[in-house]
Image (tube, rainbow, N blue to C red; front, side):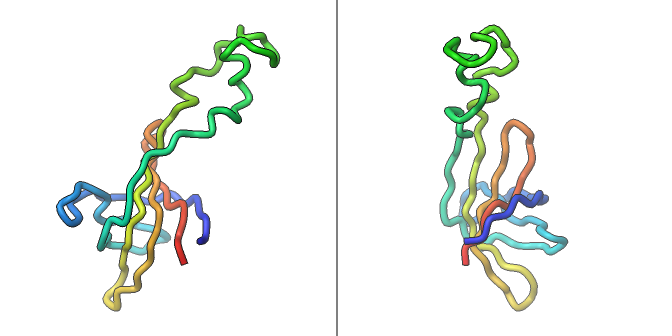
Length: 114
């Protein structure tokens, strides 16, 4: 598996009766989604965030008084779509993970499975 963090343009549509990413542009190439392998939602690693102690009012600098971080920002969700996609007439195919970040509204290609 290779990891990426590449922004992509996504067009949603219907794939096998499911509303999902139907096509995307990655590295100036148009890819068409052939199948949805899986989908899930991830939250950030909130327990590793430097401001968690401050937010909870325990330890750390500020002793819970900063108010700079909100619980919503720590729990920001990302929608992950593992899809099989093809490009070109010869149908070069790959299984990739597409990530939609709800807090930023941006799609990214984050993994390509070998």
